[in-house]
Length: 133
Picture 1 (cartoon, rainbow, N blue to C red):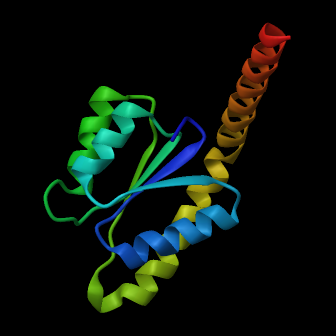
Picture 2: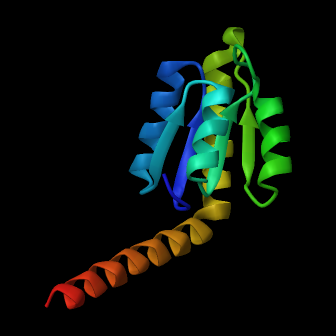
């Protein structure tokens, strides 16, 4: 995953795909988890730059994900949302607007992290080429 990725956590495959589509169209790398437990595992192996999580999920909910990540990764921003079925279209529109504001707020940080990551990868490749020459 890496520090330039956004981790989307939701047990609803369709909503997760919608958020992924929106983020990818905005130029972000996206990783997905379909549960709170899965999100914690992914964060431990490769922390993202930002976590976006549904509140209401089976098993560990988004509030618990946020609490655990606040303890284990205090500098990791976590945004938690919820959509109620009776107002889903309206909530999804508002949720995407809120998501856009979170993206705008963290865009420069995410882009700087992505640039640093690419620079490090390029330096490593150049170093390997020099070693084999």
